Image (cartoon, rainbow, N blue to C red; front, top):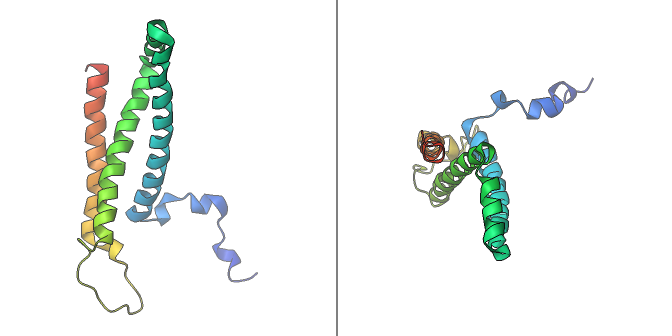
Length: 144
């Protein structure tokens, strides 16, 4: 057996969230929220274009979109939008050097700037703000 074979865990090892830090979770959430918002954007264009079928077509579509399932989807879209925005601001500020700290010598073992506590606090803040926005959106959509 080669030394590399013992580290092969396959797809299950890659999907194991325990082996990644919060930075990797933020990376995947950023990508997934971007794809989700793209899908919502395309659906929203289709929905808005249904007004071209007149008042009857618009009313039919509004009846279809007033279901509990689509309200839950809209709550998820609200969370994706807030997370994508706040995390994007965190990434832009980090690339600009804000919150990264003073540069150090790149001696081995190298500690990346993303392990800075400020970045982790910003990631958790993005998640918390998304959850708050989702709770608020659900109270508005469901009238709780």
